[in-house]
Image 1 (cartoon, helix red, strand yellow):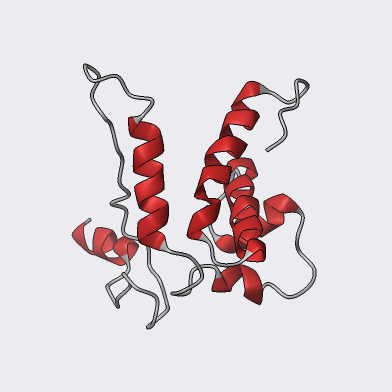
Image 2 (cartoon, rainbow, N blue to C red; image 1 turned 90 degrees about the vertical axis):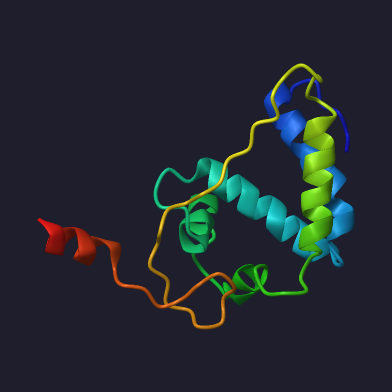
Length: 132
């Protein structure tokens, strides 16, 4: 990655971190789509969906199937990407500091029968309405 003194430091660090992950992707275009999705997440102030990320990037025309295929199995090595992220962030954490992680425990209704981690559940709002 070329260092640009006019580029904000935070943006430089983000691109450096993304660059280290390049080896987790089998194809260059998949890597660049992921970089695009990361930027779409940052610039998206609405719901964080693939569609909203693409809209934040201004990619509203054309075929979106390649973007959605990013999340299909085999597009990248998930375990390798996770290992790289852990390694890179641990290197920047002092031994006396806690290593803090976060998880998303929000139940979001999904409609896919094939996406890993999804299932058919009652809508969260319906349960809350029944209790009131």
